[in-house]
Length: 269
Image (cartoon, rainbow, N blue to C red; front, top):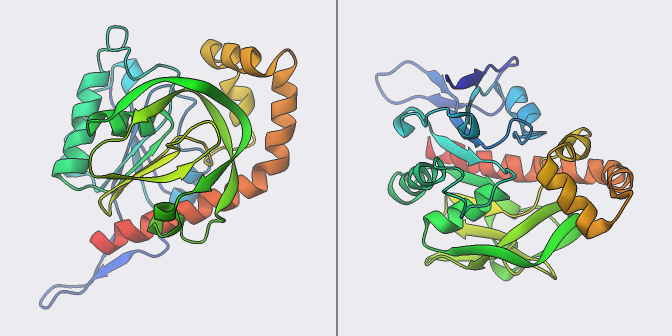
């Protein structure tokens, strides 16, 4: 199956001009590669930001058998969430090639990287950390707190030290990889965000959500069962209401993280 490149429809915002001596000025926009593990877990509101910036992005649906392309054709790698666990290689044999690609991108090529939920756990695994079942699953609108390293991280510049997020996970990073920094925590999960070098970041939680996210995710059997097991009968309408009330806050946090991350990307082009 072929990968899909999502075309930008607006003029680039904050693009880079190449004005090296003897060369005509040219506009450079980053080439963004996105690994997805289920079609409904896409970059969410970040898609709007990419469109505003005139940035095209290529989605690879690994769970549908799409092949990982040559990383040299891209400047940025994002890895999204999914209903599988990182240790289920027997059910999802593409997990190991994905970890290898993440390792190559982050540790070898030093590509700017951003991982969400499963993508956060895959980064930890790829760099030598340990991921396992969470001692206490987190589902709902919950707070995370930036650690000292997070307060000074360029990714979180402008975010409150404590901010609300959507949590929907039953696995967690148990052992942090060497050379990484823990950037955020919650009461139930000590590693809510990681940083590696000055180019790679991951978050366990979700700020990329849109008004459709909760209802769409609740159609996935694994997510629906986790939701009801943890929050009881009638959990979906309650969570939809809570998420809608927090949507403006989530979108504002996502905008800050996106702008900070893309600022780092542009500084490297």
